[in-house]
Image 1 (cartoon, rainbow, N blue to C red):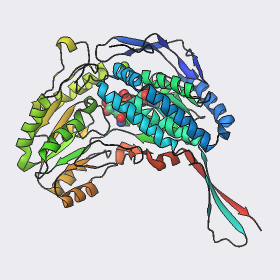
Image 2: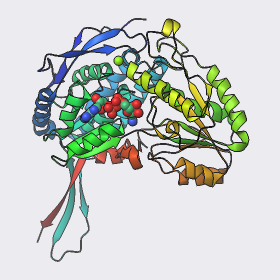
Image 3: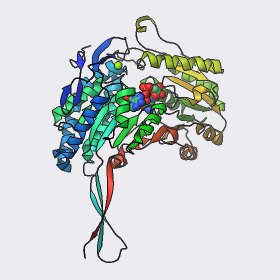
Image 4: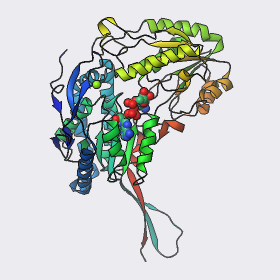
Length: 488
Ligand code: NAI
Ligand code: MG
């Protein structure tokens, strides 16, 4: 396997269209989670670098970029699209080396990124002026202006940055905002390569800046920065609470997409040939490191035993290994920290009295240097167990029996989260009732995990607020101004 020339050496910060050393002069390692080897050195940006990047982004926001027309921004996005498509294989390979996902998945991510860029290229006239009727005396004309919000801070997670970065870059370029992006310390490389491609496509200097570094200093500085108007964050609830606190200083607008413990509900009348692999991969995909994963798998009591058996059989067919190996279904977890977290929850589940039906162990042998864990099934889980209430972010399914539709909905909604959910049934009214009843931002019927940038997704309850994708997302990068004009 050819390692792309981009991987290796020392990476710098991308500020104002230049690659610059961090003020601290410090760096940390980019690790390949499949073998624990160092891939590159990453610049450790801190508060002083965030200051520089935010100031640069402000200057760029006020500069010639503010006069680009919708058609010019659209052409720019189409040039970005062409470069991302031309480099899709390289970007996918960088992503797999840096965060472990099977190469086929990373290629899918690159394709989805291209589709997303194409969607935002259709949204470049969103900043607009509309007129409204009014009931005012005299001759008054009333207008609404929608204008770009300003400097956006994007705090990116590590579980698929090749996709996540476009939820920030897409609407930023479409609306005429500018951005400072802080990738996750565990997976920076694809975002840094994207920054090169953005420059090559002709994105003006300072419009998109990338400051790598740790969450506690670079991330916290970005979240608190008085020169940043809006923060888009994807990650954990704990970090979201800090970001909400930090936003108070300048009353920042926030978009938060947090974790989940999504219910996936299988009724006895479901087509199990669809439901077993569909529900299983709804958790095992990306080794469970997906916010929308359907990790609480509710199975109607009459088929619970049969379902668990078939789930065990399906799980046994899956291949775990390096994402570069053909035919691999599950790559490694992102880090030794994440491995410890997942194995810790396997321990907790066993001690809570759930039945370990499949997996549960770290893989050794040729995989011993990576952070590999077997796809894992717990059966006979109770919804109040820790493994059913807390986000594990690993390939761990909790199978929970239920009796009828009301029982399923009561259990499904008994969670602080509300991100995703699924239902498998041949009965239209059951499908309708359950999709209406699940309190979450997305529900899938007889499928799991499909996403389209034109539709988008978002959270409810403690899974956060703000929609990603669709015109509503673009709108959240604008602010509205009413204009009352006396035309008498
Ligand atoms: P995290 O929420 O700490 O990290 C996400 C991003 O936030 C990273 O870029 C990180 O550098 C940044 N960050 C960390 N502390 C910050 C702070 N004080 N201010 C501003 N930014 C900060 O998540 P972590 O620790 O990597 O993973 C822990 C758990 O979080 C996972 O096991 C999973 O349950 C959840 N998670 C959920 C994700 C999702 O897609 N919804 C993505 C990543 C993690
Ligand atoms: Mg890495």
